Image (cartoon, rainbow, N blue to C red; front, side, top):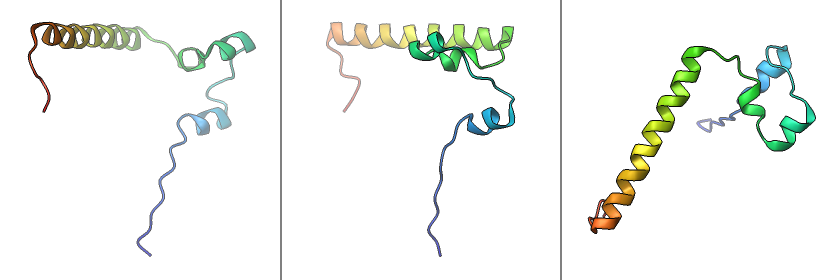
Length: 74
């Protein structure tokens, strides 16, 4: 059979083996579990900071192109 199924489970296996722990109720209700269960390091922090600046640059670029009326899509 050539049928294949791919199921993304994310961090489910890491939770099941105990590498990650559950967060408390308030953090879970706020939807911030993904930020808390990771093991933080300075390099991970720098990646998030760089990603924020890249995102801001893209947003400003799109806004600028819309203001001057330039088409950047087809």
